Length: 124
Image (cartoon, rainbow, N blue to C red):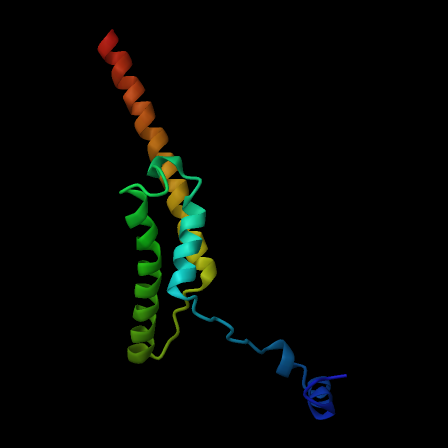
């Protein structure tokens, strides 16, 4: 049974490339409020940003949805000038959050190591 009818089923059986070589463009934009909530949720466990209402955490949380929207605007202008798509998906937004948290942890560990080396050097 096919919801589009028997004709589509028959054509798909005769010409399998109709189904196999089809890409469906299901990329839909997230609303700004949803982006903000997702960024706040993913950055919540990061202790280095301070408390939930700190002066450091709020601008960083606001920055991620802004960059996602800016990238989408640039993608639209890229399509207008080059007639080529550049996709920015919700997955890429989540990956940017993950990359930020990973890099922040690495930098904090590096600074803690340097601080320890400096304090040991001053004691000697």
